[in-house]
Image (cartoon, rainbow, N blue to C red; front, side, top):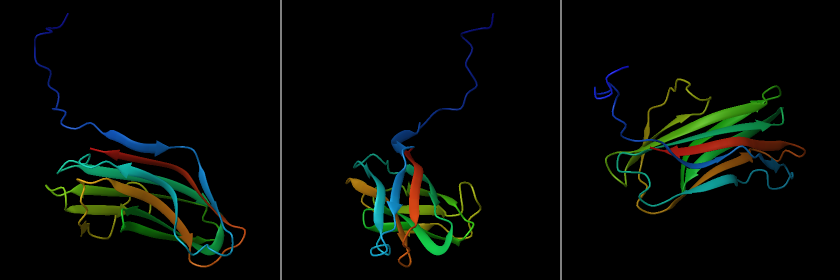
Length: 167
């Protein structure tokens, strides 16, 4: 038997992730050949005011499948009216795309940076973090959006899953 009164040598737990939104239920956007170039929100969630602490972090992961074609499909995330990532996909043999966005408060509820990984989860990124100003004391709608750069009849874009968590 071990000594149960001896301290455990474990790192302190300061923040556990909180699941804000997650879905494995697919959401599909079918091309109508008319409004394909309009951004459409395919999934959304609300970040409650003060839920993201002054040094908090939000991580969004999304996975898509789509018609393999030479048309350009676009994906983006929005926090309120602020776009934090836009990524493009073109290619007749390209059938899926993952992306992630990491947003973190800078010791403030109104100043953030975000890091995009438009080429998949954990991929090295060649762009520097971007500074933005959102008021996270107020509720913020997070939108995952899609569009084509030209009308593309007969095509689809499908959100396979998404996951949003805060720390």
